[in-house]
Image: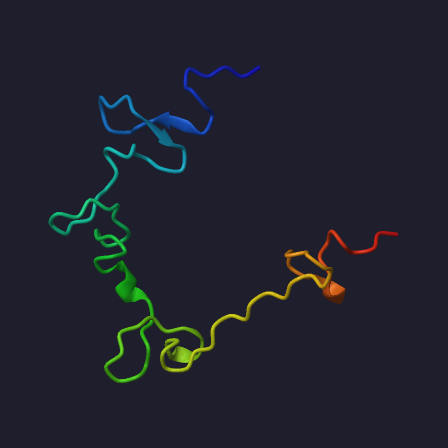
Length: 115
């Protein structure tokens, strides 16, 4: 079998010289050396552009087209306040006492007749 000197196969050492901390294999650095937001006093991880989502990364997202509104646009270019309809709630199974989401025929997978 494959043997590794690391605790788990999803972790490996941080890429910063001399750091022995483990990092997820999807990241290049451990949490101690991860890139941080460039805003003073903010310790969030930065996104593209050197700032976190809170400090400007979200500015790339579309805004409501109504004059003076800074809310994030939903379907149709407007926010929920200005008419965007929220997603409909999923229909529940019609069997008494069941709270699972309904599939075809109005019942959940648990209550669907199996041949």
